[in-house]
Length: 178
Image (tube, rainbow, N blue to C red; front, side):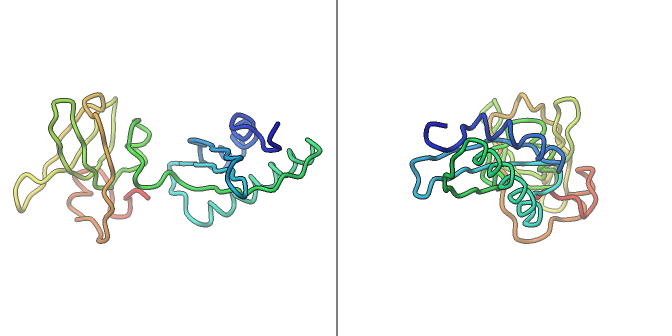
């Protein structure tokens, strides 16, 4: 800890089990000693949405553990700790990401260069169920191999999804992603 701050690896090692017990995984940690004040950012995700209560709880646990580490290192470095979710602009790159975004609308770019917009359904053995419009009044399910998806970005929606879309995607009306 030459800067007085723990390294990215130290933060992950210190917090990983605590976050896992709460049902979340650490996706990344950024330790920025050059920021004023210095900043430690922990990005976490889980099958359940990372809401404000979960963020507050994880922040308190992380702060206590990092304070203990700081005390053990006989230092007292000031920094800002930020715990947050990856955000809606994070590209979906793994089956886990697609599973966690079930029920959300997304735009997919496929390996053949085409694009498709639809509602993310379940995944099974590397295949995504995507609910797409078949015409102006009906929906259909398209199965797409995850290996054929080059890029996937979730769309922000301000109105609830069509219940029929959710049903086709294998989801109940209350099962949309974060």
